[in-house]
Length: 252
Ligand code: 9WO
Image 1 (cartoon, rainbow, N blue to C red):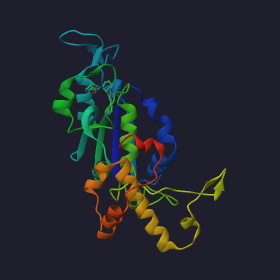
Image 2 (cartoon, helix red, strand yellow; image 1 turned 120 degrees about the vertical axis):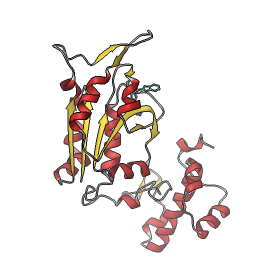
Image 3 (cartoon, rainbow, N blue to C red; image 1 turned 135 degrees about the vertical axis):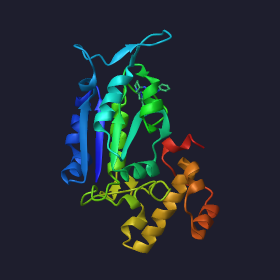
Image 4 (cartoon, rainbow, N blue to C red; image 1 turned 120 degrees about the horizontal axis):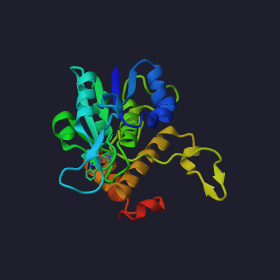
């Protein structure tokens, strides 16, 4: 059971993603509770102001600390893990998502404007998470990415027809093998013969080898930590070249 509270100035941002697909199915299954809160509810005064000018000068507004502190004080439980979405955070990856799914209670803090008062990161958040080395307009989209990647690891969330998390790309530390469906031949582009053979042992071997070749070519960093057998290693040693999609070539 996982409870997630999201603090944002733009709760409507979450409507579409939470009403469709994986996230809503997880909620309906009763294994997950997601509550989106408008941070303005914890802002004070007639105008419920949540931002203010930046100390030290400079352009743009900074989010005030008090609404975040008051909201977290109201929502906190003993097991709460408070996360600020920020480009300075630790990078989200598959093990991190799995770890978050094992927590009982997550509180996600979404910033806006030019930034969030540093005391939120320093004294309120237990954790800062980044979804990648770029700036976006606010923490909402990153929060949705964290939520999606995390809830896939909550037991029972992957419904019928979905592949097991253990079979997915990254779970093995390797990139995924290529997938094909009908037609077997399309405008001169053919599905590899082995996949049409019906020989499941050969197919498994081919898929493993494709994963290994792709990972070496596109994400050699993953190969360093991957769990490789003797057979895997000797295959890679024997294989000097491999075909890869054009977008992978640049990383060589
Ligand atoms: C912006 C920023 C820029 C350089 C270095 C550190 C930084 N932190 C932030 C930040 O926390 N900004 C707030 C949230 C307010 C402005 C919009 N916000 C934001 C979060 N932009 N981008 C993210 C984000 C979060 C997680 N992963 C990637 C980007």
